Image 1: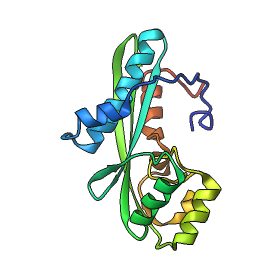
Image 2: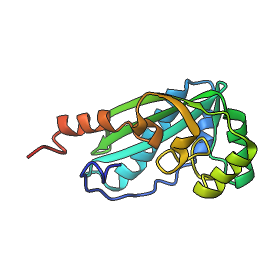
Image 3: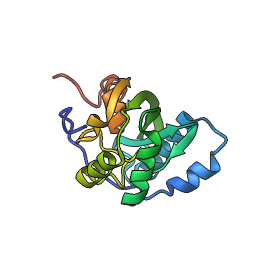
Image 4: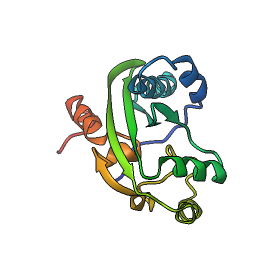
Length: 180
């Protein structure tokens, strides 16, 4: 997404324990959880590269007031999609921007998706096609996952994992990027 927006950047993995953070924050709201994970990612990388602007991002999928974690395997992906088919769920994406080991800005966005009613065979074929085992919600919207949905309320960028326009607005404001 950042590349498509014309930004040059370096991707650095933070290696935080997202499950531990989620467990410690289980009484917090879902946006707070997404923001905290994004902040921890940015904070760790910023400590290694303090002069750089560091973006930490995270996404939380919420269905029936519970977080839907990355499935990790094909059978769990199929199970998750079978539960969500025909119903609405929410994707919450967040980012935190760090510079000089300090938080510059943070934001989150929510998008609501209604999944089509799908047969088990259709779900299995989808999972075989996109292999969404490491994807929040068990689908890759940016590939063939968009075909699973009948209705979307919100930003496609949020579904893809980053509230891009709010991030770009902050990067312009901080003069990290410009039109010139």
